[in-house]
Image (cartoon, rainbow, N blue to C red; front, side, top):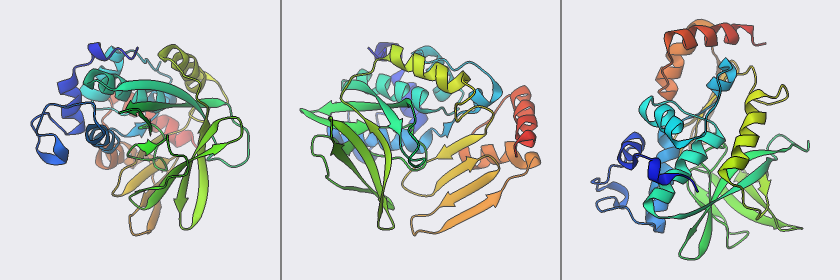
Length: 282
């Protein structure tokens, strides 16, 4: 389903920094579809490949076929947003031998406003137990799998605690506990989503005038260490000890910052266009 047979797995593993011969994180062996491998791949993916929607900002089409994702996120070392990130992760996990299913989620992190289902997440089954996997929610999201089969079970990841809670109608809600307060991140149902469904959601998110990604610079790096986000002109660092640093980015420093903070390098034309759009932001 996820075209894992079309993925260059060795190139992907090199991109996320866990080659098959690595001794770190239990990778001194051939990868197997077990929980240790799922944790290692998920954690390495979110640390290495930043969340970004710069192609949407630039008006470029966003392709979700494995060949295009591999070219962009692996070989050109770009990032992507949820459909790209989780489609690539699904292909890699399927290639390793995991059972992977998609879900469509409704963002709840923006308050009480009812938003459409536009977020893509994955459910990976290991030894009969389902796990929520999501490399594409950006800085508030988990960087490791979260158990689904035991609603309410809390898992600590860095400075945050996550849990999936069940609501009426089999609605599952990923929540994040930070500084003593639970925050809903997104909600989803057991209905499976397929790659073709993500094509439709991707079309809305990349082209509809009400999409949160249109005309905005959004780049984020989650992970267990410092989490970094560039939202418009505001650059924020969240540290494991609770410190938060915020600063403003000027257009002249944007391209260098993308390279320094997120490891992103754009073509000369795209860089010039992005700076022009950045200058126009309020």
